[in-house]
Length: 129
Ligand code: 9YT
Image 1 (tube, rainbow, N blue to C red):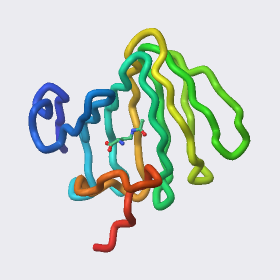
Image 2: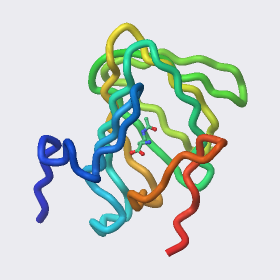
Image 3: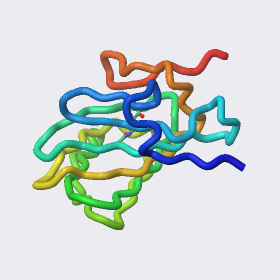
């Protein structure tokens, strides 16, 4: 059994951030679970376009608020505590931070390795291991 505490991840290589978002990778590919598990904070008022072409992702909001726009249809959905979105079609999307920082719990299949960076499309490269 593994016990992971987010406070032990802060400031390590498992925490990635820029001014507008922070993501803490509680579980990565090397943890051997078949998925990765993250806590992502999206800053209030910020905007992010992501397109995980090589991954499926489920995201569950536990605090704060924001919106997600499906860039294929233009549909916009409110996100608050208790909302889950699943990118089951590798959906290209824009996330908008709301009036408070949004705290999201995310899981990726296949798992993120920790070496990915967002490319020009907002995608992560495929894991070639
Ligand atoms: C909200 C969202 O898509 N979070 C994904 C995790 C984050 N991009 C990471 O850990 O790299």
